[in-house]
Image (tube, rainbow, N blue to C red; front, side, top):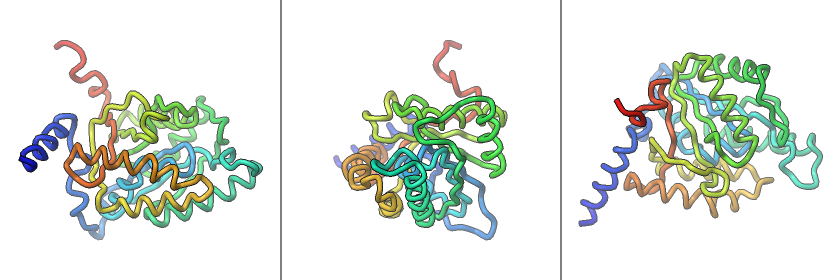
Length: 252
């Protein structure tokens, strides 16, 4: 009975969308990289907490992974000046990226004062395009944090400018607290990289990682894993191209 129930859950999850990057856990890197991955996050620790397990899995499979931090977390340490906090959080991000095997890029916006305008759309578009991505990850655009919204909206505009030539994946953070209205289309089994993700997130010592991970994200990973019948998973909303925006929502 337990096996039948597990199979039913897996089939139900498949109905929501294809398993994200299937069989990556069993992939082995070849001499040639299978592609390039870009993740756009609002602050240091956002990409790690939202999709760090998936990014680590992609890096293990041979993908070149780049994390673009929109800000350097200048306003994120109480009692520290912006310059002091930025120096601390930048180093934490560098340490985390070493664990994930990702290249860090700091876009240069200011924590708590992010901007979405034509100049920044152009700037982020160029940063993303320079990596020649085969897929891009970013925040869910209706997260409660305005910096998360800015990162998502800039990534969305960059995607449109690219003529939607790569799939765009939205990740969740602190579901029900920051991320709302999130209905996954895709899942990634991160059972084999869950410990690696946790180690990367714990590099962000200034952000109370036990509170971020052990109290929030560990439960999220367990919950999403149930959709696949695995130990831990991360969930995403995927937009493949312009045609999928209304797919199945309008009468034919």
